[in-house]
Amino acid sequence: MTNSTSAVKTVFDVEEIRAQFPILKVLVHGKPLVYLDNAATSQKPRRVIKAGSAYYATINANVHRGVHTLSTLATDAQEAARETVRGHINARHAHEVIFTSGTTASINLAASSLGQLLLKPGDEVLITGMEHHANIVPWQLACERYGATLKVIPITESGEWEISRSDDRMIRQFTEHTKVLAISHVSNTLGTINPIKELIAEAKKHGVITVVDGAQAIPHMHVDVQDLGCDLYAFSGHKMYAPTGIGVLYGREELLEQMPPWQGGGEMIDQVTFAKTTYAKLPFKFEAGTPHIAGIIGLGEAVRWLQDYDIDAMAAHEHTLLEHATKELRTVEGLRIIGTAKEKVGVISFVIEGVHHYDLGTLLDQQGIAVRTGHHCTQPLMERFGVSGTTRASFAPFNTIDEVDAMVAAAKKAVKMLR
Ligand code: 7TS
Image (cartoon, rainbow, N blue to C red; front, side, top):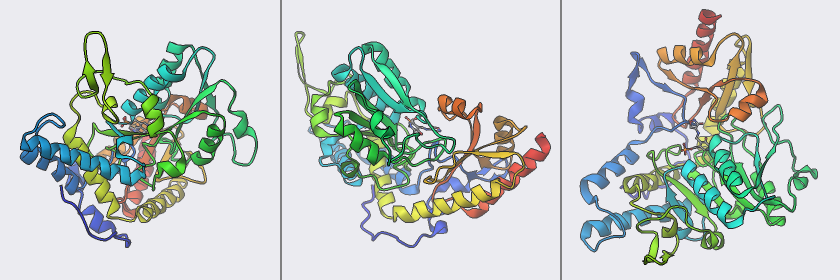
């Protein structure tokens, strides 16, 4: 748990970053690992790995439970991480940061609790056609339970919302029945950066609660929940260089106060009798049971690691990789890029005529190159584009132009073998 006090590194040095990721020394099929699957999960810098193991080796104890020294140290470390996350997303209060197991759990919490609070027969929940299943299915479950309807904003051929900032199609999305807007900040499959601030502002005018799936945004950009104006914002640690099994649901205090708890158990209560239970104050009302303490500490360290860099410089590097990959992949015969929005993070999905994505992924793996293949948990989006799946490369600050070239060369080789 190093507390870095060094100044932000504005000069982007990819080799300096690579040196911090032990996994980049691993060989796959005897070849140096080329890891281009960062949207599925990012790799972890040494500092984050150490923070988790230091917790287990030196202060392992349950939190908020005992007066003994270790319990106090573990509690302090956990709450320091909460404050670090608060600062990172510019929430007003640390108790607006709820720790969950990841984006999926965060959205399930939101849908389950908001469903109970708000939804009744005839109401509508508005999502978009590019959502990850984690931002579809929990809302379907809530709609089924309370008799509400799921409405979907369609997606254009370039992979953007079929509503624009300038016309009234945005306004017309909202009816008197709309209760919740649940949207991804960045698409995991297309890489599209969505203009969520405008839509959130419009939703607020209609009294609609806004929930943002920020899983793919938070590793690549400054996220300021107050500036965005959203009510809830969900993300996972493991996509932002932190351990797996830890995530966050940010919630605006006034809304969280009104929302009923999602799960019951230890730590989320104030008083329990067999007749009635009263609940703990925020954030503990939403944190039943023993949390993933090492994960929370690791998340705090990952945020501090990110804050040591200029995240815009990281994003600019990833954008250079994206542009290079886009240009080079277009030279592969029969290749079609799925997702050509103007604003994208470093994610590129493609299909190649006559080549199945699984076969391509397997052949790339033989070269040590890790990409994701399949539907990326966005089956409705695959249907929209008329494909069963894609091959997806997703970049991190430690990736290089040489690695992109290796992927393109391996893809060309694979195409020759598979056609
Ligand atoms: N929302 C988005 C936009 C995502 O990209 C993901 C995971 C999730 C929600 C769920 O996150 P989890 O941490 O709870 O699993 N996306 C991906 C992906 O693109 N490839 O593997 C996982």
